[in-house]
Length: 81
Image: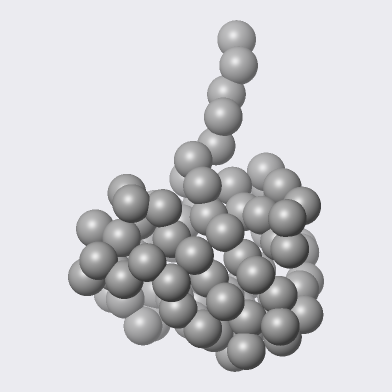
């Protein structure tokens, strides 16, 4: 199963869970699985974060797929100006 690592701001919605394994293999299903598992973790809260899939940073991961053994790390999006 893929491993998801949450930053501290998302851990507030997961009951302080820092990492979890998921069965999803694409971003859309990942969001649905996480929102179902942690009702306080809304799709909106998830989408405010970028995602690193196996070390590759994806700022807009909406159509991304990943392997069942991938490591997924959410982190705050960085904006410049």
